Amino acid sequence: MINISVVVPIFNEEENVPLLCEKLNEVMSSLPKSYEIVLIDDGSSDTSWEKMLQCSRKYKHIRLIKFRRNFGQTPAMSAGFRESKGEIIITLDADLQNNPADIPKIVEQMEKGFDVVSGWRKDRKDPFINRRLPSIMANGLISKITGVPLHDYGCTLKGYRREIVQNLDLYGEMHRFIPALASWVGGAISEIPVDHQPRRFGKSKYGISRTLRVVLDLITVKFLLKYSTRPIQIFGKIGLILGSLGAIWLITMMGLHILFKFGIGTEAMAKLIKSPFWVTTSFMLIFFGVQFLSMGLLAEIQIRTYHESQNKPIYVIKEIVEPNA
Image (tube, rainbow, N blue to C red; front, side):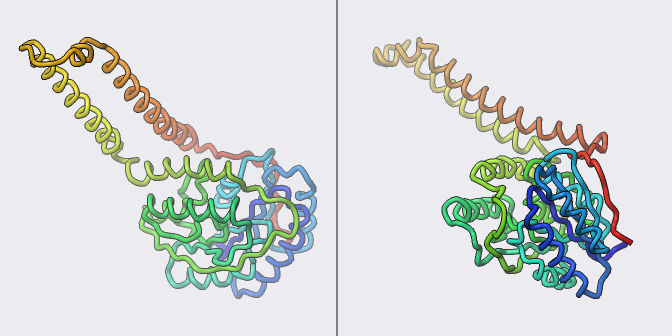
């Protein structure tokens, strides 16, 4: 068993790869621990893979994983967790906005007994409107809904104990919710400020559309954290609320009908009682709302059953290059 595995998903970062490998090698070789650096090429269309091969020949502890196509950051993380060998797994982005020099701080914090240590980009070097503001809003929402208060769920620089992540099945943008999932199984979570650098090369792969995907995955996480073993609690509550509203409305209309038969009422009341519009419209809208919500949640459960029952990963590896002996 290796002490530390550093897992880095890479997608079209040809200019950053050589400098990233140099810095990682410099930091990790200074630690008195055995280590490996696992680089995952997530279907890059530039020369990132060639640069990764050059680095693996230059440095001894680099393992390479190449996907057949671009699957996304979460599958790349999942592959890194599955294929790495370290007791502690450190993840970071390949764009060098995460500083590899912070890795010893993450390791030191984990040695205090924490299962997950999350980086906090306290002085973030990104545009405010399209990056930092959506992040602030998303972090507040995620912290509120999951009950795990972190300043920066989106920071990729994190440390995990293998026993926490080895049994996690990740989909969508779920890698950022690992602290919440870890807390659900009793993991101890910590957060420390880390350095954040402006991007020097290449283009960011993040945008507003990704924020929307994160919000949708957050709904799934909330369902999994609270209702995955007792779905009747959520569907039962919805059913009781809707059923109660329907019963109250039905009793009200029956009461109005009785009153009108005794000569109590107006012409407007008569039109309301005789009109089928209030029945068909309200109940059809309720039915479709519940139907679509149920279909979405059941589909989430079904896709997990599909992958997990077959032990089927959410990525396809084309090639693995072992460390240079």
